[in-house]
Length: 208
Image (cartoon, rainbow, N blue to C red; front, side, top):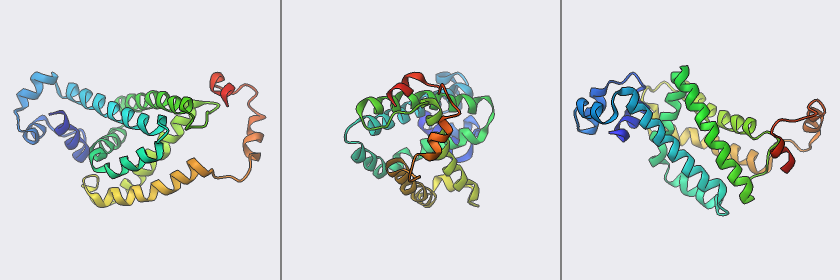
């Protein structure tokens, strides 16, 4: 029932009724209410599952020494992750308090697994880890939302073509920036730091 709800919410948005989800799952709407209490309860269970999958998969990629191999393995299994990525995009598109809570939960989780990557020696520490994580999440999800906004297919999130195109545009430039950098020197950073005598994130700053 939960997996059917994630797939249907990802495809059609959160206005989808319980009867449609129940039909997808091969159960009655009453069975969903009995197990989850309400549509809100079902969505909360979907959120929790999506958070857990993202956290576990990203932690595997960023904290292990075999991170490149793990990342390639994820790309090979992208179809399995597709409904959850689409669900995440729909949650952000929906806006409101629920979307804000969803993003804050993603940020909190991401800070934890990025710090694990720093401890493992696979990620460079940041002067402000929370701010860096927010930028990275915004860059990744923003790029996918941009692709989604440019498509005319209302069912784009359910098609392989959309994901192949969107991920194709995102993966190479992201890896270039993350591994090789963008600017050729530190002039802009050093100039900016002159205006920040006490950067936030003191423990991360000390490591940096």
